Length: 412
Ligand code: NIG
Ligand code: FE
Image (tube, rainbow, N blue to C red; front, side, top):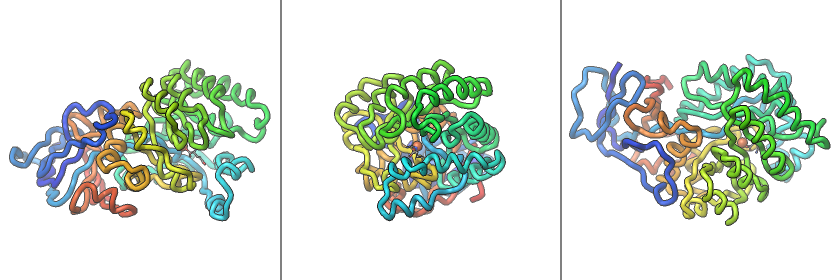
């Protein structure tokens, strides 16, 4: 099946050989074809170019006059399988309590774990599927999902089985991450060693046996997992074939970035506390820094130093961190707006960070993250807008008029 989109005002991130992360100054370069056509065939991008060279084809044709076409966003960090929500904590924080104080009192991640324990597989699956479809309508075309609200064998496995089922049925590509080391359950508060044993001796073998995860994650931060504990867990995960990606330096200079780079993590995520030492460490490795500005926005944290990271020559990716505690939104349009408004990234840098660099962080760079021949035809068509910069500028609005997933127009 073939169809064509014609008269596209601007075809964004469109070029061949976009299969590598863009770093430093390269992040401000965004390949765009003005007044373009795009041909989609059998679910893939078949051809594109300037309207001057537009071929005649038999299939259906869509007119995109005045509109831009973007490759779908790649959301490389979410926790979108969860039970219930956490508005009570939201109110406590409005009244002055901090995220860490709420967590230390048994709220936060432990609150979500408590709710998830009693939730059925079906209810978790249905809610998560609905969340994915809501994000798809906002332009997301591939996603990473973590466990980590189980915190015991049965519940972690239940979450990962939900993600496996979502992988089978969702219209977008999903990568699955085991995050048993998200918080210490209350019973293990004073016996960390025993919880590490639970993760390493019980959870990991079963996850490997059922092929439930692609990656392993640890929340390496003050009050959560130390760099030494993180190192041990990552190494155990690696021995089962799970590549690491970690939560690091959200609450302090935790040593998380260093332990991630040392273990060749695919990404280190959050990075609110990133200084010269951390930048130097990232420059020596191959690990993608992923920033999650909607978390800093929602929790009122200070924002990570995106400019410093990019200006040092590093690549950067953006993700939503969609979860009930620190970012109850998975809207990548808003993430891009925050990146521009609060992280001082240019629209071009933000778009690179939310497409090709995020695809690299999920090892999807050969199939997603750009408009290139042979890649999966996951893209969105904007409404009629003046410029592509209007997307991050017009924060809080949805400027998407159509979604195409696997080469098919989705009814939205
Ligand atoms: O990425 N930082 C750790 N984990 C999540 C928060 C999870 C929660 O509060 O439920 C995050 O922000
Ligand atoms: Fe997270």
